[in-house]
Length: 334
Image 1: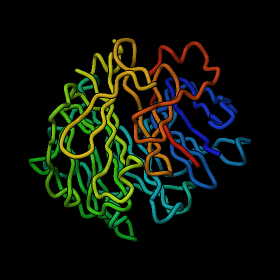
Image 2 (image 1 turned 90 degrees about the vertical axis):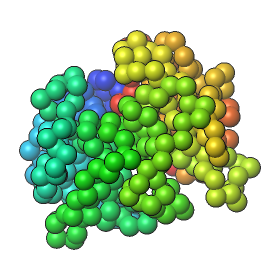
Image 3 (image 1 turned 30 degrees about the vertical axis):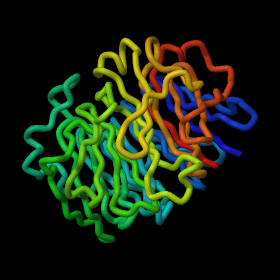
């Protein structure tokens, strides 16, 4: 059974994808920004009410100790240890929990980096935030940390909470929204950024920017897996949501999906998932199966089992207001 946690502008929806049913709608007074799930807890980062931790099968919500900011903008669970949870905030700070998200400690040094004087989020130019945190698959103590807008950083976090930071490198994107990794492709990472797509094969020491066939370069979400016919191949299938600009992605609603295997991007129009006019940028997620991907946008929730060639709508009864809201976060539990 696949359970999908989809955060929209005012609520978190918990969807039983097999039964095509919304099993819970949790409304929030503050906009949800991100969502993460462990075996024991569900986490929702909100813009004004901080981090919310859901336990006891939804019987209670709690705000963990140790996070000072009102805005929690990113969350991730360590791949090697579900008790380790990372959270990023606005203003840009990085936090870690080693007890399953019950308490957090602030990790030092992020705003001491030389490039921090140039960080700024255009809609709120006097601030910036940690948009994404992604552990390296070869070394979970090494994190890729995206600051919106201004830098893609690396952080090596020791057991005692000390951090060895690496500032942005010249080839890195500056406006990173999403980072994906794959457990079988060590030292690789893939990036969707407002200033284009990028990928690394050396754990972020350098970045390449293959753009052939990518007609829309304001990139929002990226996910990585394989198409079925590539099960024994070293070439990943990369899915990407993109638009012409932030305005089209978030406010007007004109966005597209792309896939790439090898050298060129292919646009996924007329594949069963809405694209184009009237569609806000999708949030993407990989499933457990290599060829399974999920996409959520203002038209609903969609799944592909063949690497993106054909999509099926998860036909649930969404509230009408969802059609006017971009998805903010997506987590899948298979």
